[in-house]
Image (cartoon, rainbow, N blue to C red; front, side):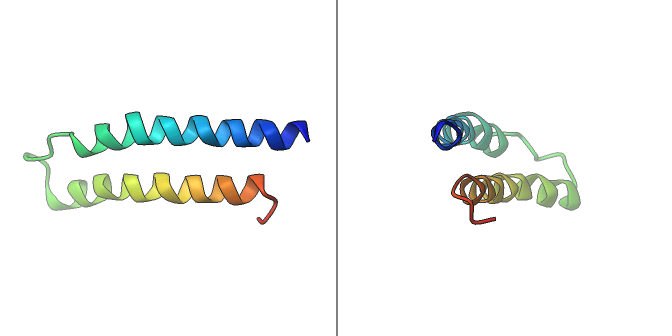
Amino acid sequence: MANFVSGIMGLVILLVLIANLFIPTVLDTNTSTWNASEVSLWGILTLVAIVGVAYSTLSVFGIV
């Protein structure tokens, strides 16, 4: 039970950090002088973060 509660607390902290720190930093970065491949890779970071949160959530509940 303690692992489940700590997993939920970890998910909450992860979601707060991603929503308030990571995603705004990625979206507010000036990419005007970058080429197309760098911009597209930078844009995928948000998707990777969301997939990571989904995987972590499924892991806490024992689905994966």
